[in-house]
Image (cartoon, rainbow, N blue to C red; front, side, top):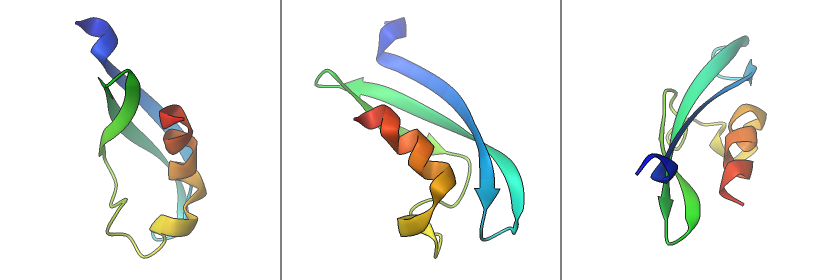
Length: 63
């Protein structure tokens, strides 16, 4: 079903690369809630994961 999948692009500053970039993210609906399933950056293993303002935009989709 189309509503179970969402793809979004987010732009912002990447601290690791020290540049502005666009990150493409994929979300799936699980138990009625959108969950981030994929991001085309090192989110999760990046040293700036906890303070990443770029991915913070994507994580707001989960709320």
